[in-house]
Length: 220
Length: 116
Image 1 (cartoon, each protein chain N blue to C red):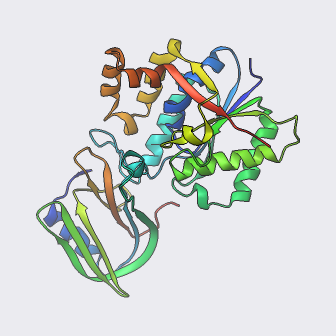
Image 2 (cartoon, one colour):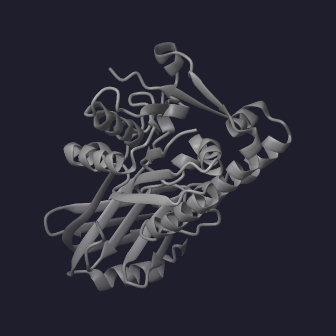
Image 3 (cartoon, rainbow over the protein chains, first blue to last red):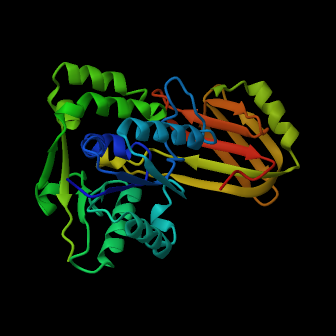
């Protein structure tokens, strides 16, 4: 059992697709989870189906969706860092690393979950993972939390190998679907198809909803 | 948002002529376009809160629509616009949504700055 889990992602819904089941396994075991979400996904392309958002109302809607997702996940400590979607890699990196460091210091996590820099497709994902890793590398060896990183770029396994941590989340699959569904503005166009595929036994969707894959980040 | 009513949109734009406006302009293919198709060049842009004043122009087309404005120092142009709204803060928000309802372009004018 972990002491405290810290999850750091840039966009509301990153936690839903990648780690909802893993988060649930921790919160249900009574482990406190802190979720630092860097932006409100202000620049998302999905506006709901039918359209429920526009560029100016989207942040408020996604903030509510994020809060609902955290409620479903049992995450009681949500920190919204207030950065702008797409701008994470361009923000003051030292300041960002400092802010992440203070959350690490305060929550003293035994495990951090974030993206694997360089292999996480979206520039915000890569920048988030890089900032977290730099914050951890500042810490004294032996006192550092373990980092479980998410990678999904094309061909990433050829470079970083297969994921060494695969969490079986079968018992949380339906709850994971609900967390994905909570991000209504982003998933309304795809959730029905996903449910149908899941209940019809589609291999790919079943994998996504029953297994979550991580790479232990090799800190030097 | 609702489908653009071009004559109402033109009327709205005309009322903003000569005023100092803040612009949000954006195009996007989505951050995953090149992930889903590696041959695809993902190009996009956004600029938020550029102040300008326009002196001539309007909305054209049969839908999707184009808006072109001649400004004091240059031009402002957008195409692919399908929907719009005037929000409670009196900001004029145009957008272009594709067949899946995903935003491809946003073109917004306001007399006060958009929140950072």
